[in-house]
Length: 64
Image 1: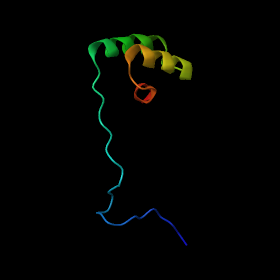
Image 2: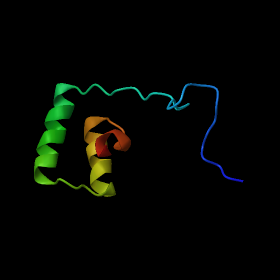
Image 3: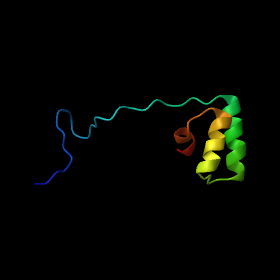
Image 4: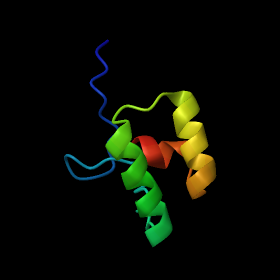
């Protein structure tokens, strides 16, 4: 038995995943993120949590 991931029911190359909503950033959020990432290009989990609290954005949005 070989499972190649074919689910059927749609054209080739289509996926059943839902499209994620694009985040619109407010000016103060962009300013905060740009100033932070200018200093630290690779924040750890603690830094992302702090940045999340400052901007009001989820950590997942900040790390992508």
